[in-house]
Length: 558
Image (tube, rainbow, N blue to C red; front, side):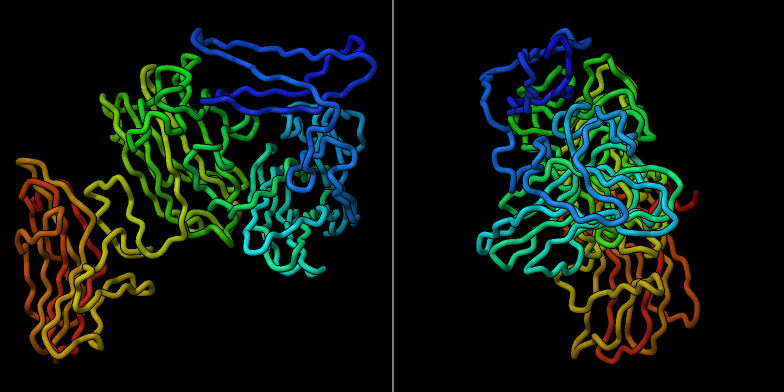
């Protein structure tokens, strides 16, 4: 405009299909729209545009259900002041007294976009900064809606908070979502279920700050209301989007050399991606590590922020693909708001020359790693060799229900001290009497109150273990048995399909007092389950328990 060039919209990461885009163009006198494409190092890359048109109206057509705050009327949102207030800002306003702002908005990914900001300013007290209130949102009967928004929260104290309420008939009720200060200055996604009931609801964002001597910021952008339930945080099949998972932005206290991108077997951006997803569908979308920049090295994918009150105890299941050498790898880290990180899963040894999809699973119990605080989950893909292929798909986060064995199964993963859970060991569904888990005693035990009129057997079975031809495993159990009448404790070997193969050992005598260790060697080749079986008579009133099992890939004599 008048000889001055402004970058008003930008995108970089590749995508497997056509994507709709729109941008409000600031018209002053005579203006010209210029599309500039910058090609990277990949000679096979392509950038295309199609069906371009200009309308004399705002791109924010339905401001109630979709708002990027690009118009000065901010979609009918209103604010209520406290120590400060929510204001519409643009990063380009460098002379603003409340600067520095977040470097780019989320809608256009440029410094000329706009978002709503609650500035955190020096203060001698903890206080409400301000409330941002949406227009009234209509509530169709019996339809669960989901509110998704993007936010930045780089406060430096745990007393800084961003809280979301759903106000029904003037009643704020309990918060729908809240977060204490995070450690990164980039846009993150959050989704909250819109409460149902009255015909309309109002969403309210509250910004709070603690005592401070510095300037910081809380910001939101791109609020979207959809008529469907929210996806579980962390869950994603990548068919429509990345569901809040995103590549690490430079400057977020982490650095990497590559990116995770969406692709399919048919439309991958380059040749270094799997030919299909784990179901064999060449048109299904997954995430893979981009290789177009010649790139070996690390690619970091970060999740939304997990809140300890809601997301402390989770089972995380996913599929992964590694084709390459031994050093090519994927691992998962948890990272706390202060930048401290902890590895919780590693695919060591799972790469191969042919490449195939494998199941991964890990129990995420964050308070075993950190003191309760907001945290993120990171996928780390590492390509040591130029021809390696690394991909992930179908991430599913569910609430931990007592069984979340580590996948893929390694023989050593059958070992368990029962300090956290049952490590994937389960009661046989046909049991006449079940083994019970004592979280306080870190042990499995049979309850005399569960005996019946006849002898009863309780079987407790392991995940799959594998014995190679000519190899041996050593199984060790730490057990205790006290009784006066007929009862026995056995360790049995079953096939992968749960057919009985052999009894490895049986303990008849009752030893009073302390736990004992007993080991047995297994040389039978193939895939098996260990089964610990307790047999008790109708008159049994004793003690039968075990508090540790271990499996080592070597003969017991060694």
